[in-house]
Image (cartoon, rainbow over all chains, first blue to last red; front, side, top):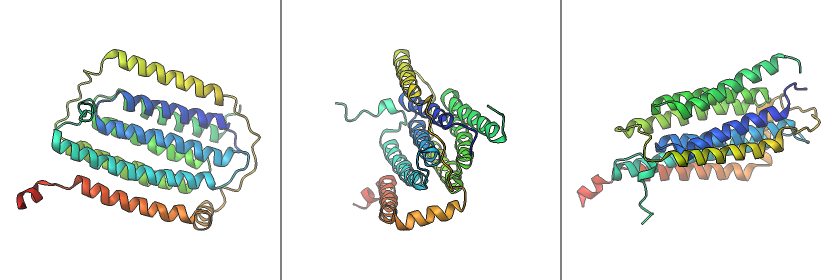
Length: 104
Length: 172
């Protein structure tokens, strides 16, 4: 039996998610926005693993879901960086508020 | 609440994780932000070990603090002339986003602060990797194969997107 209550893990995941959300919405550099999104995905993974142990029926399924989420996050990071490279070659900027081609 | 070793380990890991996140928001140089986030990723791996998920912890160290951080550092270094000026966005927008995030945090925290399910005895810590392997190859075999297709598609897409196009233009 564990001494740390489940709500402590959930609160930690909530704090990390909020940090990632704030970073993704306010930072100007696109790389930092991408890595903030990775932080949010990580917080969700903490929730999944927490409920795989502390849920009403503990089972391995939560950990398997976390592994799938990690695979999707890795693919997203690679494609996001590739899109950033293509944009940087054409526009010579990494600032996310100057990437507004679809606005007009 | 007694101060067992598990509690102390959780508090230390959570503290390092949150400090890494706060440094991500407050540091000035982009490379320093990414390096600060490595601390967060490694301490999240420690959190996974506390939750008896050793295999997920190993994957976390390999994928996040290894691969994704290195990819992000490459992304920063290949887009060389960065100025870290934080102007143009405006103070009001930051304040509004901050208020929104704090409201979201309070709303979710009200839902989880007294989350109390009676703990069930679990066998997750015994042969954790073998359990994950059995689940992946029996119950989750089709999603597992789809993940390989997804990774292949991401690989090809990333190569095509990041490929230089001026050579082809020269040939034509």
